[in-house]
Length: 109
Image 1 (tube, rainbow, N blue to C red):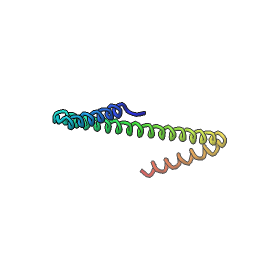
Image 2: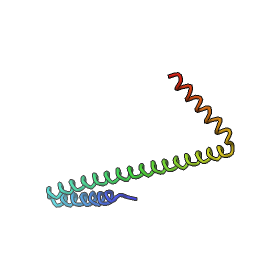
Image 3: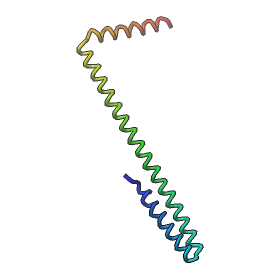
Image 4: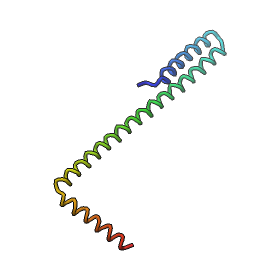
């Protein structure tokens, strides 16, 4: 989706070019200067819109990657749960080893 700043900036930039060219052709320094000013404002607005579009794109990309990581984590957690249901004794052994390791760490302190 294109940001509205890009559209209005491009229109203002084009209008400024036309106004500057008409001012140059007519010999009006004021119209020429105003045209160049409008052209510069349009360029700045267009660049601002491009920056906003880039930020929106980056945010969308990060959000999709976070969602994928969350889904993958849920998948692995579910697989681990299924394995612990299939092999309850293995889960008890792992829990016992973790408890033993924590007990040894605490007793050393």
